[in-house]
Image (cartoon, rainbow, N blue to C red; front, side, top):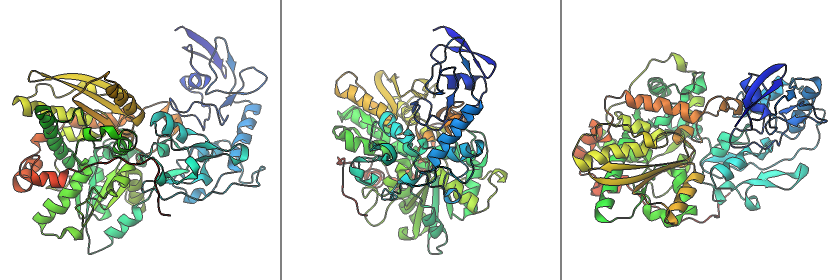
Length: 584
């Protein structure tokens, strides 16, 4: 493909043919504002905020305007600025402008654009405004159409990226709104609670279901022994909420902040990840040796599990029966830890800090409890934890590094990479190889399953047996992969699926990256680098080397996959209808 050269605001720019004017401008460091645009996801020219003068009779949206050789573009004329101002004022005329109480204040693309364009508080288009009831019946996601700007970024995320498609535009003109089928609440639909709609939304129309008040209540209850655990992806992203560069590993400061918030014990979900690998690798080996159901598919991602139960129930027998790492850790806290510390399990509250909104739904599942109490009592996202730290007046960036508490605070590099797509697969292969062969693995890095490609495949020689594996992230990619397996086009022994593109580092509960910044860097890549670096520098890099996990088996669990381990650490799944009745 040949290059073309155009002029933007008197700057000559050379770009490959097929490049949009918006992309060409970014290459020349010329800022064109956007609102509906989201790179590789929503490039539809709906809001027209990115209009430019390209010499025609009318202004054109630069996000869908292909650059041409010798084109002359002006991005900052009086006519262009006035058009943008009018477009944004029209959007604001039907928008709930209570910015001070909005969870997206100071990280809202509409708010930022309004300030940049100098829009006055008095709106010349003020008048009738649509009003909607807030949908807060989901355990994971709150939908507030009063703040919706009809950019359709959430629709693209749900339909194209995740292949779920439970929301879409209905009606026309001023009556247009983004709704579920029959205007049902999200909880009554086949929503998998992944939260990718939240990550895509430029404003506060979608947000996580807050559990901060519950966590504060638990911390202030003297009768509760409150234990917190934090997932690997959280440490690679939390720093962004405090101005640190994307991909900064803040493990030590994270632990220190949690202690200052008042938690009685600070444990690492990585302990549960190592425990998961012990059980899951054993389950894989058993299935391969005894003719069990193959391919075995990971079940660490609750969004993916929900997708499987709803859209691909025929693959439920393929799901690993292992609970996810934070649920395993919760179960161990209320049994192993409770017994060792002589604390009644009902006195213990487990709080999980997760990069994932679907973990909130997962913690509510009755299958993930012992009948008397849930494994996990509350789940807060990375964003919620950042708000708690700010509420408490903690100077996060000045905190000294501290270590996790003993008993469930030690982990290996294999557990850390759980947060990136392919990480569970790689961790499982390290342990499965050495378990099956009795030999030490010479090279621990399985490069073939790394990276952000939607589907990755590899064949691994384990003691003379070729093990075919696949990795998918994002449920639309999972659907493509499963369809190939169903059609007999592909045959695997083991499949890792993560509900969110790129894995947990890009979860629905992670810090939201504005659309302009996503054009410059990929959070999936930058955050994953922190995890792979931590793995490479870890003194222990294989889950079966974790001394605290081995001690837990010796002192409490018994044999891997044994009766007690199966009772505490495994679960079951079932087919679920696409539509259901909810209270509210």
